[in-house]
Image (cartoon, helix red, strand yellow):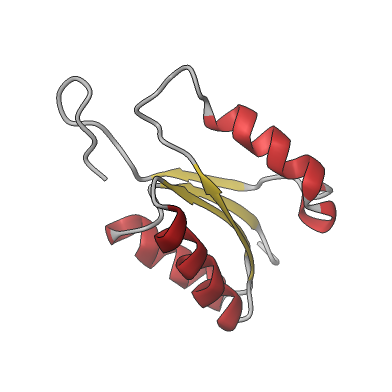
Length: 104
């Protein structure tokens, strides 16, 4: 896949972060999400330093009334270049353990 567009939820730590860095090194266009604005912006900056196009969207998958699809739609309207690309890879690395407790 040449310069895939990759969406990673739970991208701020662990497997999500490692996967984002690996895709960035391969020249992917990345949309990363997580709950922490500061950590997310720092990750997007790190990914750009590796040569990738990267954007961060603050999202919390624990709240089903705020689906990430709605966040992506709003983001897509404001990011001209990446909004014209179709997402080719979606990785959901954040999850829940038990009811209402976030794992990542």
